[in-house]
Each structure stands twice: as C-alpha cells, then as structure tokens.
Length: 292
Image (cartoon, rainbow, N blue to C red; front, side, top):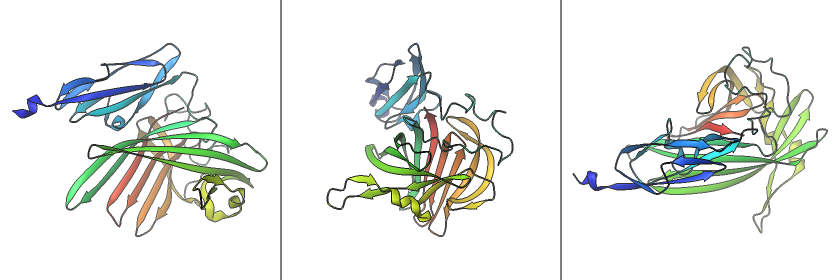
C-alpha cells in the first residue's frame, strides 16, 4: 500500500548537442519503467548513457526503484571510433575471419589523440552470505603527450570511475602515462608512471620503457602466442553494448588469487575487461558502450 506513495526523481544531464525527454527532475512512482527519447541536433549523434546510473539504462529504458541520475552523451558525427577503419556495424565481414592476418598498426589499441571510451561497470560478489551487484560507468580519455615514431611516444590516460554502492555515488579518478615503442616487428606499450614522494604529483619516466616488466600491452596479437603481456587464447565473436565484434581474448593474469581477461579488437581497442578476484569472490566487468 505504502509503495504507491513512494516517488523517485530522475535527473538527466546532457553532454554535447542533443535533447532528451522526459525532462530532468521528473518524479515517478516506485518501480515505474521510464522510456527515454534522445534527439541529436543536426550534425550530432547519440553515443550512449553514462552517469551514476547510466549502466542501468537498457534499450533506452530505466526502472525507477530509487532516485536515478543519468547522462546522455552526444558527439559530432565525424567523431568515428578508433582510427576510422572499424565498420559502423562492428562484427560484419569487414573484420578478418581468421586471426593473425591483421596488419600491424601504431593505433592497435586505439590510443589516439583525443580518443574516448565509455564503459558500463558491474561489480558482483557476496558478503556475509548475501549476493550484491553494484553498477556504474568508466569514462576513459587519451591525450598524446609525445608523438615520436622513431622513439618512445607517450599517451596520457585519464580514467574516471563512478560506482553506485547502496545509493551512494563513489567517483575515483586515475591517471596513467603509457609509453609506446616499436621493437622489431611489434609495438610494446609500457607503464611509465612516476610519483613525487613529497607532493604526490604524477608524471612519467621514459627509462621505464627499457624494462619488459613494465609492459602493459603488445601488438599485434596471435592466437596461442605467449608474449610479455600474457597469453592470447582465442579469436572469437564478442557482444558488448557498442556492438558485435571479432576480438582476441587475452589472459593477463591467472593464478590462485585472480584471473584477468581482456578482449581486444585491432585498431579499436579493449572492448571488454573481466577481473575475477578468486580469493575474495568478487568480479569486476567493463563492457564498452561507445567510443569516439
């Protein structure tokens, strides 16, 4: 009976040029499913949903089982994923049917200047015998600091992670510096971060690209190949919110404590990231929503 009296507020923010209905601040009865309509302005296109509860939007609908805050992302139409070679309908015949025949590219992981990736984040686990699931989103942006084809290029990676835990929005920002270096017939990507002990200010050290222990990624990828990054297990069809792809499944870590897996589409980047923490029974999944 009292449930009929409960109302929740839907807050809608907009990034870019476009409109969304219903209007922000509208109130709804508990468990109402609200249909969202997006209308891009001329020259723009709708890229996806972010915000504290953006991961809960499915087919442009959201269930009001609490106060919700979402953000509609619009971008100019010329902002294409990756380097523009990826088809608008990912997973079609324009992608290679067999692994290993993708040419080497210096943009293999999509770390191009001003590139952006939006992911849905889901944290699942068990605490005191009860299952829990937390939703959120991760916004990753890239900026090329040094572009040196004959030496070490430096890419600045800014990650903003927002997770809603029991109605409380928690936002964390991470800053990484990635070095890209051509070694023989492959590209290697290194973790270059340094931090000032007194101020905590982060920067980068090019000398870290001299140590294979700092390798984050390797390109190109080949199935069943062991490389400094990990083991490439398969080349398979993968479905994420951004579309259907053929992707390399790569095991970064697999021991008694944790298993880390990523799915990589050449010249597009990482479309899915699965972290399984076996010792504490928690999984963390990133699922690509859009990129530009």
